[in-house]
Length: 329
Image (cartoon, rainbow, N blue to C red):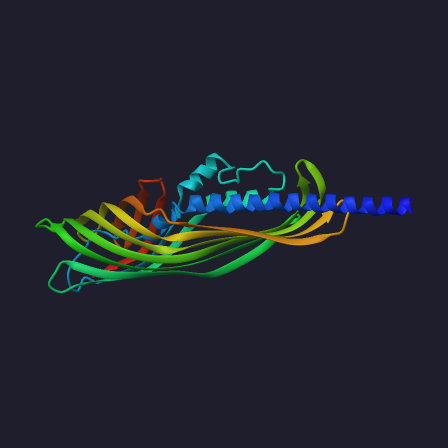
């Protein structure tokens, strides 16, 4: 009878220890997920307002009716986080010394390396009786997903985005020859998008520095943004008839929107002793865009091609725009 009681007590004690170790491990991973989503959203909120307002970089060729202009092109925003990642591969890694960090650490750091593309079809038309033109632009990337496997690690990547914008430009100065022009511009842009990353992998499961089993994991990372940017710019240009122009300007944007980072983990825990357990953990963090940005822009129009560069004075973001077809009547 005593032997049976001892065995029952030992089984009870081992179950309690197993449960305690499992709770410690999952709480540790949950803490890592919380830190990862918080640090990514806190970083990316600095950049998405600038991204939303980028691409309004047309030559100083404002005119009244008919003033028809249209084009097609695109560009890309490289955030200052991208350059920070080049200098420090651990940039945006969760602030943790846990051995359970695994791919959570990798995907958190990858977020700093995101580059954000945009495409656009735009058109403008002059208003009769006044040196003012108005126009709109639309950009769209349909949902694209693909995946694969590298050694024992599977991966999945997805992306989509949509953009809509309006702009009005008023000519405030023109020299008698029409070579030098300065205009003021008011723009409003809206966009949203998603970036999806994910992967499957297997790692040891730790409590402190002790291995208590193995985790077979499927990790998902979803980064979303959506908002508006209202911009006011003053742009001047030097126009050479039949050839093109160079132009430059200064602008300020008011940004209203938010980013949201979500990470989810589905795992099968295979302990060194005890039954297998399947579990799910997730975390999300949402942050509002930084409210303002100041930008410098410079561009070149050569025949029917436009090139432009924008720089965010407040945090070092950069936007590069290429419009291979820009027609003006």
